[in-house]
Image (tube, rainbow, N blue to C red; front, side, top):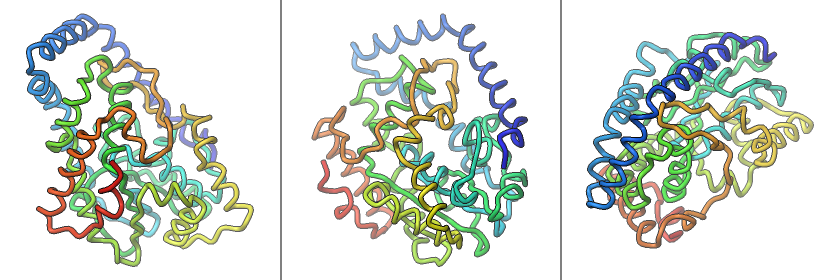
Length: 335
């Protein structure tokens, strides 16, 4: 697999970013007006209402893309679905799966050139799911498919493989705050209390819905359910489990290379390969996809009360879905 094999995908991505950059310049006055409006809303106490209304079109676009992303698609034996809740190690897991599939030799200018993301609200930034090249050029015949969609919207087949990953929702809230500020909302990001309230009410898709949907799949032989934290604590062991899921036996040299290419240090050094660019006219830019790579550090911007509020929202969501995911063991005492 060579970078040049996917030059057309990279060209389409860059053209899209140029169009967004042009729109950003033309909408600079609107952004300035909205910034002032949000400042007034904070002072008068209706920031949460304004932010919800402002995000409504974005939320609808995200919801619509999830519901229709896989319409008509039949999974094959070449597919490894990387089913990860937002800001829960998605790029990390895409890199692991892609490198295992290519025995440590997976090259790309940008990860979405070789990994399809069908539920992307901006399909111009990713290779199409029906494009055969990632599997055809892979020595194992396997390719990764990224999705943030709950299992209800992801086509299941005994032929395909499914890697499902969730993360402490408190850490998700922090990581998502930095991400949305850099690639989507810029200076229009709300205060932390408003952000927590928005996520607590299910903004961008409830954590409990996603977790419950894949937890129900955990005992299927072609499904591997992991938490971000256990992958972080034993990355090599997790990579071996994922390789086992994919039925790929790595040599010692190949395993060492996959571990190195999936390390925080390596991925942070090539962050541009995972950073999608500024995706809306309101983004400020300058962010990073590989920021800290740690867990249990939500206290950097969340108060104890906010952490407990997020926990309680997830508990309520899991109870409502009659899901027995062991929330307390993994996350309930981490505030």
